[in-house]
Picture 1 (spheres, helix red, strand yellow):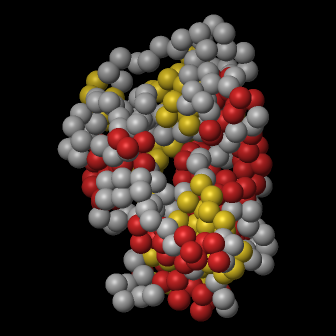
Picture 2: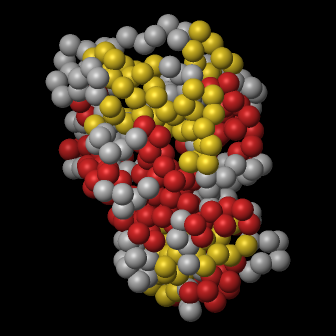
Length: 351
């Protein structure tokens, strides 16, 4: 099979002919139909996250936003069948640890990350462990392109908005960064009746945010006081603010743009400049009684609600896809991500 692999950090991916994976007793093998190119793939490509114990071993096939058709299953698999159309959470879980049993599989104690700790979806076929738990059946109304868009950024935004952010209709929500996660936040929060302020350095991305329902936008130039601009746009500050990037400036701006009793949700993981450490305005957090929470992925148990909204047309992740590419273009897209030149979502659908 054809697969695009990281063989050296920051260097072009190599298209290789590899053996097709075979399922273990609990596994399934998927024929990949669509695979998103995510900023997390860029971090893996750059060799980031050593401070998290997450630097990938090479060579590695990246890709964790995918839709596929089951072509083989192991002898112990019971609920997944050949021919099923499925998607897969990027945080593959064991299904048996205390976190999984309590409905928080996104925090699995034995988590394996697709495309990071094992080979992922930049390939014609991919093996999915613990298939009965990790393969999520797709409703007929959900296309492979929509499913690949859901795979990481959209489902991550869904959890951040609805659960960790606890966003309510009529509230003001600020999102810092209008990339894949940020645009997903705009769409999901707007559909829930919230008023969204999108912040970014790129006017084109802010225009996309407006199309997804943003009520206000803030262009973050070097001279822009972003917290002041958000407070002005919201009449006193955001009730909830989400940082979708993980850059020092956006983290701090997100906290400082909140009104009293506001809630900051951290979604974006940091890069090499921050290496996991960002100083927070702790006195402002204390005196404003602000809440700071993290948000990682989306629990398996939340997928039925998300997919039902997509199937009903109330959420449209496919509308975030700005282009589709062939497997051999993946390096080009990753390079564009390094300079924030991508807009919306890019999906591989030609292998």
